[in-house]
Figure 1 (tube, helix red, strand yellow):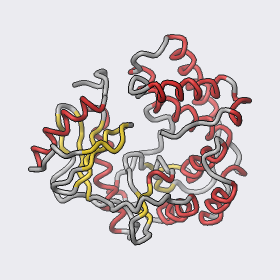
Figure 2 (cartoon, one colour):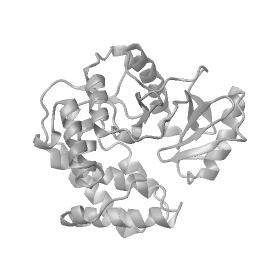
Figure 3 (cartoon, rainbow, N blue to C red):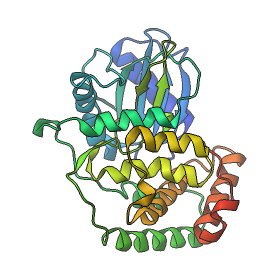
Length: 300
């Protein structure tokens, strides 16, 4: 399987079988939790979460996740812990990592809790050996467009131009303060609340060095598309100590996030009619920014 091969629940399931065999685990009762940048499965025996990346170009990210998990543990951050096995491993070109299961109470983590966690992470000293890359805010957007399957040429042309325009705009931004360790995908779904009430941070592949505003702009963007209430967003700003929307350049950061969210969903348009319809809704918001407030985006 290559980066050009469609990455689906079915193809990831085949990779899972070999990954489980490599660590002596049983894949027969595995459940797919999420299909996005990674396919994420949970096993019963042993109780392990398996993250399967889309292809070889994600190998460096998988290696970084392992380093970051150890660093977070050393700094006392409440975060996912690695399953005890040599990792990452490579299965048919797919980097695979294994994680201890975080017990999930099922209750929603609030934006204010995310603000508190981000404040703690951003305050941690970053050792050289952590080897975090510099922020590449556009990350995989171009690769997603190039690898798109079943998307019309006019849509791809529009997305490429949107990307080009935002790259030019972002390069003009100036941020104050020293770079910090960014989570890189800092939204509430990357926190799990345990039965004991602890909010545990997950998903470390986006970690990098950059301006704190980039992490904060994720929740601010979600607020502007209706995913957080006024009170929730106020709590987020209060626990972190900043409202990033007051910072110069926020609108550009917001527009970058909207493009990233749209191209992320584009990868799965063939999975269901609901995904395809949501992709079209997001495209409409990108084409006509004035309609953003009236086009309620649905989370996936």
